[in-house]
Image (tube, rainbow, N blue to C red; front, side, top):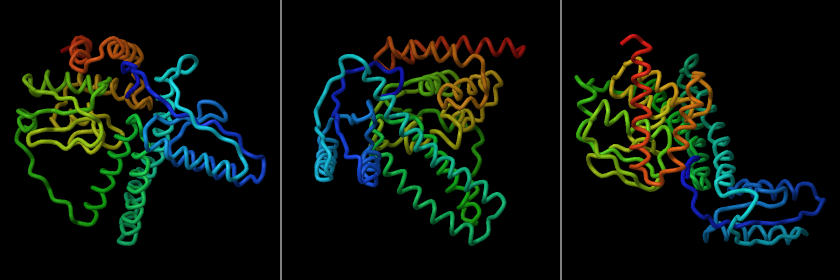
Length: 328
């Protein structure tokens, strides 16, 4: 569940433990095990996982390991009543995974930069080996990404860009035939995205219906394990046909795929980017206000169609503002 989504009751598993002061390596070992199963610290000696059969088994094995090493531990299932909210704990999980994803994305960008200066056969072989390792690491992170952190889309975009670059430098890339009208190619599709839409997906939905296909059908599905049907385009989804590419959010990618160069839409794309990726790339002064508006829409509208309906006038007015500002 993304920031701004309606909060539903969540059951948590808590591991409360105390470790012996020595040996020091045992404390490091337990810390690494906690990181490996995706647990986050809600207090100095209290770690949390969302409650399910798999996470309970993970904590039970770790509890046994702690006790066998001379420590004390207990596992309990809890519902948060006061102090931290469910949303705040979910944000801890997302923050941890986003940091992991950012490391992988940076590594991919660094490899692309190295290929810019050295695309020898030896370098390409090295990058292919590293790609296999990174893909394995990404799969491990996805397995403990309990709430679909946004950074997952960004890192997938960076890796796809790197893989395309490796293929190109190997002489295997084919020059795709350029469609006469990119927008025509996108019409008549069923657009599919994750449930719990927020700024990027709300903006994308507005863009699709306003400038690409007014009659577009938009479906909302589970974020993981969805296999597309013929005629469907997944957007802002892991392994989607249209999603984050490199450091570009899905709104930016759709603009590019559709061949749209309207300056007003480019300005909106920069705002959506700054809100969604939180990297301050464009430094848009409007981002803070729009972020608050979208967060309010998400908090007061549980359904995805309602969020898009409420978000549409926000982007309609923003678009008209930039058109007039640009003298159009």
